[in-house]
Amino acid sequence: MNIYCVIVCYNPDIKNLFRICQALLFSNTNVILVDNSENGYIKDLSKDSGVHLINLNENCGIAKAQNIGIRYAIESGAEVLVFFDQDSQIDNDFISSLTSSLKKNQPMVISPVFYDKNCGFRFPSYKLNSFGLLKIIQTPDNEDIYSADVIISSGSAVNKEVFDIVGFMNEDYFIDFVDTEWCLRCHSKGVPIFVNPKAKMIHAIGEKSINLYLIRLFVHGPLRSYYKIRNSFLFIRNKNVPILMGLKEIVSALVHNFLIILFVKGKTKYVKNYFQAIRDGVFNRKGKKG
Image (cartoon, rainbow, N blue to C red; front, side, top):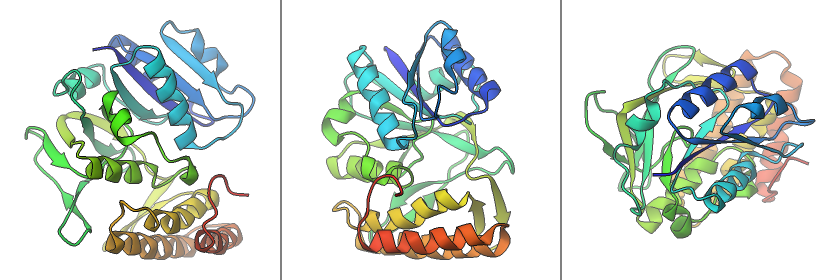
């Protein structure tokens, strides 16, 4: 199958980005870099054969950047699209392991398992229970593929037919909840999502994490915290989101980011963004933060 990999970037670590591009090119895939950075930050990387660079010259958000990459890939003949973040780490066998269960013209989403870059723990996948809440699913690494309802988009492989059924990413969110909302659309349209434990990827969420034993706090900058809170209010308005799930995400975003304020430096920026996010979420303000 003709595989295109879409990597969305914003001021990335060039060395790590080069490594992931090399691994993908080794797997005979086509690589698309969509750069949200200002001033052509990664222009030199596109000299590598097989890498196509799309410079946006401004931060348009991950959803819009992904959509631009998706459209370019499909117009170029992609049959399967695989998504990556700029800090993802994979080996040369990743693509073959991940896509081994995909079948041509059969709508499906396949995700790898993720291990935290800093702490080494495995991120869970989720299923919706009968109350519309997400429950964690974990299986041994030697298990075959298993069904999930919500996954992280980074590392996931998607047949092109899925976008005809489900549509593209929701640009109203800019960042955060983009992959969750898209997964729920897949669920509502009957598009299956699977996790393949044989495909493993190292991934980092947040700048660091704080283990409070009962919960683990993933720490992001104040602007990213804004989107996490604001978008939880946008998320609950979506028709595909169960009401209990939407309410839980709002409470979780508010509590999680309040606790972060207690542990970080530069609290003033976090507090300001915290309350701006609540205001903008309540008034349904979408897109890039004004």
